[in-house]
Image (cartoon, rainbow, N blue to C red; front, side, top):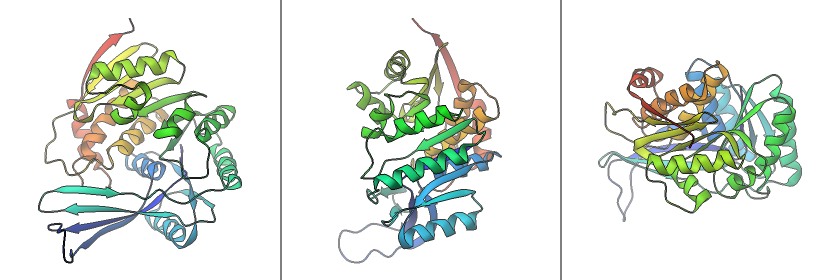
Length: 314
């Protein structure tokens, strides 16, 4: 399968004992890794024994470092050169409180011709991939309908698009319609102007997405509760499993979920079964600090604990 990361990062993970407001905070560098939605998804697919190629932008010295990190990690990738510098993001983990802080700048500004080069690279790489994942924010310079254009190109190439984004990019993509849309509760609330606090709220959002043709499959997460996966057959509540340890960070939970969904759909699973593993992977990702990858063996051990409840369309 294939992923697109139009606004990647180099993720710097630092660790401090206690974050102080004055004086110096002595930090330990925990990790430096390539990041961004689609890159994280590709990494997760490989962890789940699948195959993935990440298409991404890369600019300046940070872009060169991004490419080196992906090469060293053994992630198959296609880099599209851009003029401005790729962004760096910081994850700060405070060991005393066990809290993580994820600090992310907006990133470079892309020119129109650079966006077109990304579309061309994606289309060339798609080949016979049944699924393509577009994940993450859009950088400045691209119009809000960029993911709608991606969806159109992917359809013409004979593939299905799985989308995970937010803000204007999310609204812009829905005019074209995608195969599967994954929203967290904040993104879902922005689509309907109502809070998403329960499975009922998530089901209402998904019903809206299906009836308007925005997505064939809608997945809305509800924090620690789990997620609702909705298809033409109905809605399935997927309750998150009890965690076997203390939650450390939710930074990689969404990307892990999308990776599991994409991997299992590519393997032939139905959307609900794929999403159930996604809920287990998201739970496993909560047990790792910063944006570190989830442990596949933990995710698989949690999968039987994901409880489901089906409700047909009214």
